[in-house]
Image (cartoon, rainbow, N blue to C red; front, side, top):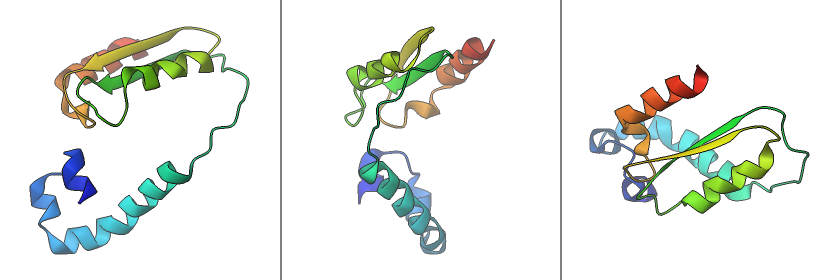
Length: 102
């Protein structure tokens, strides 16, 4: 199961049949959007962009995230954190978000 391989869904949730019945259509729709998205060239934005990633992510590399730099006319920052695709569990991320928003 892709969810288990990505390591972002607690095993308690994956093992809960009723919750999975509710969540699977939502997750499938999310994967479908990702799999069918086509990038279209647009002028860069006039706002800063901050990109965050996981150092051990085998889905999204730092060079993938670095590509966001071309999408802004102003500042760009890239911060990498310990963790895989679901590095979002890192407390350092919240501190970094606060810093970026200030």
